Structure formats: structure tokens, C-alpha cells
Length: 284
Image (spheres, rainbow, N blue to C red):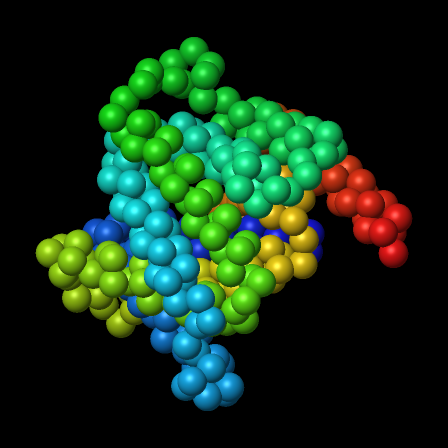
């Protein structure tokens, strides 16, 4: 649970930094450079084991995972200009639901009532925060929304493959190959839209590389320790981190919707953590 909570915090910091950069550079270019710099950053500590140790034990699966994740990124970037922020957030947080379904269907994980309840209650908290369906807040089904919806199961597929890979490869090897393959997938789009970043933008891109690689590393560690379905409700804590970050950095006090949804998300996460700890204690 703690590894997954750290994942959410790092991804929240990543998204805030990328949002700033996306106003200055093309989003496709930002995505490519974030993964490329993440590849270089994870390469340095990974090399302490030697170059041979960087080669994965399941190279085909690593390559497939990278391509699948790259496909999800392409769909996400294509949808980004056409989807409102509330709709983007709500649809994006459907990924844990797809992951839980996939864990049951393909990984034979036992989806307990507590896990389903925590995920559904957490997702309800997300809807409270973004309330995309209030009057004037929902624009109807658009091409952008369909693309965003399509990216959900694609990202879920990437994470399910990652769970399988934790059985054979080290976490740093998995993160390195994911970043490398996604970089290659985004390369043609980045070259077509290339603009040389300024020194300050390069510095922020390096920060994105650190946050992104660190977030994926923490996520893989979480998948290695626990069932992938057991940690999905923790993903919703990203909204809580975002609200806290917004208050600390910009002084924007969270509104009533955010407080209500955040409390619901926290309650579901703590309840599931307590339930899972009891299960682990009974197995000991």
C-alpha cells in the first residue's frame, strides 16, 4: 500500500510539471522527452549490476508491454485537446476498474468483496471531486472521450503484463525497458513536432524523468509485493495529493466537492488497508 501511495504522489508531481511544460512545448514532444530522460536516469543505477544484467529474462513480454503502454500514451495524447479536465480525470480513473477485471479474468486473482467495495467507493469519491455530470459540466460523447475511454483498458493491459513480469525480472530492469520502448514508439511524433527546449525546460523535463521513472518503479514494487487488484483503490489518492499540492503551491483551498470526495477516497483506502492486513495476518 505504501509503495502505491508513493506512486500516486510521484505521478501527481509529474502531472503538475508536465502540465506546465505542455503549455510551452507540444505535448507529444514532452511525453517523448520525459520517457527518454527517464530511460537515461534509470540506466545509471541499473548498470551497477553490469550491462548483461539489464537484458530481461522475458524480452518479448517486456517489448509487448512497452508497445501496449506506448499505444495507451498515443490514445491519451490524441484525446487530450478535446476532453475537459473533469471528464479527463473521471475517465482516467476508470483504469483501476479495468485492472481489477483483468486481474480476475487473466491472473486468476481472487477479487474479494472488500477490494470491489474499496475500488467502487474510491471511484465514487473521484466522481464527487470532478462532478463531470452536473448541469453544464458534461458535454456528451465526443471523439476525444471515446479515445480517452479506449486508453483505459490499454493502460490496464500494460499494468497487468507488468504484474506478470515481476515474477521474472527486477524492478529497475522492467522500468528501463518500459521507458526505452515507449520512447521509441513516441519518437516519430516527437521528430515531426520538434522544438528545441530552453535550458529551463530541459531542467523541468529532467525532473519529469525522475518523477516518472520513480513512480513506475514504486508501482512495480507494489505489484511485486501484493495482488494487483489489492492496491488499485490506493490509486485514487492521487486526487488527494493533487488537492494538497494545489493548496501548498497556489493557495487554492479545496472546495466542498473535493473535501467530500477526498474523505471518501481516504476512508476506502484505509478500510482496504486494514482488511488486507488482516488477511495477511491470518495467512502468517
